[in-house]
Length: 512
Image 1 (cartoon, rainbow, N blue to C red):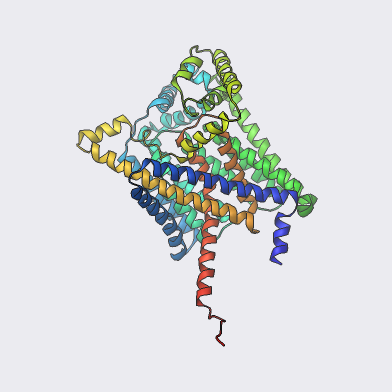
Image 2 (image 1 turned 30 degrees about the vertical axis):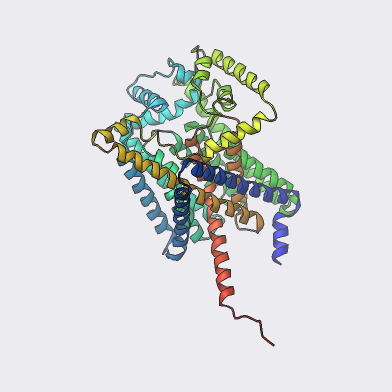
């Protein structure tokens, strides 16, 4: 009977492709594990210390997952409140340890928000906001809080703490779509441990708000089966949230692509789902698309007609990220030489023309051998490198520690912390990989949600093979993938339980 259920779940072309996509998600996580382990052992001497950091990270990860199974939770609501409070408190402590002031692009955005709150809109006269008009959305968001509550840097850092707390609860909620409550608790607690988003909490980046909106959109979109009216409403709500996420930071398009891919796979399974099932799935996804494009285009139009930014929320230099991403010399990372060449003129059209010329030159010079080498280097740097600390522990923060005679101690602790963080990161990705394999191997409740999360993550991973990379961008992929660690935790628990039962059973062997 179990074999028949699995065949019904994954039979046919659509089922086989769905299982293959989940396996690809597991392979992606294993690639990240290998890149991280390679970096840890290459950057740590002696090798015994690297083994120690790896063992400690794995112990923390697996120990947290095991603890979540052993400690009973009286109610899911109480656990969510405790989880949110713990995440908020830990991130608040991070802010106290690193009272970061905005630098680089973050300083430009915060300064523009303060000017806008004071009645002076600088975005129509600043080349930065003409080239990348889509940044206007986050500036307007900050300006509202500054205008109404005189918000300062600390206020927005606390808002980042709040975003982290809500994201943890959403990770738990997404995990509950397909895993046990104990497995979902493990996923939520692993988000608490994840060092990437924790380190970025004091930074006034738009990633925190954008990610929580994207997770909320995925949570609503993955609401399971129901009446057609419910599917339509969920699609509209999910599309609107994904659009708002894109307005804050344009990355939610990967979730839209993931939803489209899930719909395509559902259509290939029309024999199992039936005409009504496929029609209901299509209706929900089409509503998601309609709401997504209506909100993004509507807010962009409103931005332009209101005079906030004459270019709306568009990207006037779309070739720039790809030109950087195919830079062989920097391995797809930022290049000041490229920036000096492309942005020599403040005119957006001239900048786009220069970026396109640079991109065309690099595409023409690429070969079948050079591109795989570039992709390998980008994977190593983007997904395998240590967690970046320069955005949090800026020169101002490190200088303050040095003034109190704690500069060397800070550097020592940071050096050890990023290595331990690498071990935790490896352990968490191993659990995610196990969850992907489990979802592909067995029929699971909420397998459509697991597929949506996996396809969204794969789209984000593949996009960064072509566009500019920064290791701080990997927090989004991790947050989307982490609910799958709940399945990995459940699977490990089942394996240990089965092994324990076999040891307790009396042997049937008899001597003659």
